[in-house]
Amino acid sequence: MSLLMNILWLLFGGIFVFLGYIAGGIALCLTLIGIPWGVQLFKLAIFSLFPFGQDTRMRHDQPFAGVPNVLLNIIWLVFGGVWVVLNHLFWGLFLCLTIIGIPFGIQHFKMVKLGVWPFGRVIVDLKSLQPA
Image (cartoon, rainbow, N blue to C red; front, top):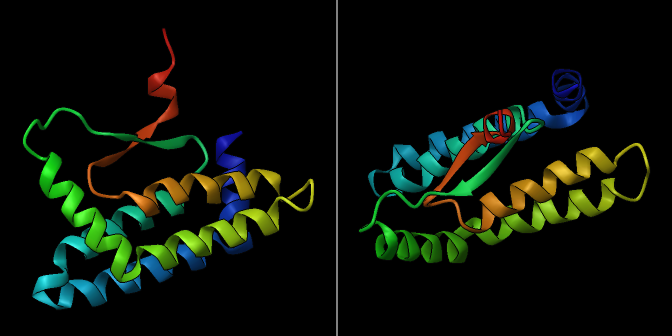
C-alpha cells in the first residue's frame, strides 16, 4: 500500500517538493557556511520523495550533540525553517479539506516535524519499528 501511495504522491506534486528541496540544498551547499543547512534540506528531499511508510525520530545515540543541534535548529528556524513549516502546514490543512487528500495532508504534517527540528532527527522505516 505504501508503494501505491508513494507513486500517487509523486504524480500529484511530491516530485516538485523533492526538486525544490534539492535545488535549495544545492544552493546552500554552494556557500560554505550553508553546508549544514543544505544537508538538512537533502534530508527533507529524501523524506519528501517517499513519505509513506517512513517517519522521523530524534536521535539519542550522540550524547554531546545536544547543544550544537539546538543552536543549529534555532538558526534554521529563524533563517528559513519557518517558511518550510508554514508551507507544509498550509498544504497539510488544504489537502485535509477533502477526504481524498487526507492521506497526503498527513504526510505534509509529518514533514512539519522535520521542518521544525531537522538537526538530530533521522528518517526511519515504519516496518522496522514493528515488533516481530
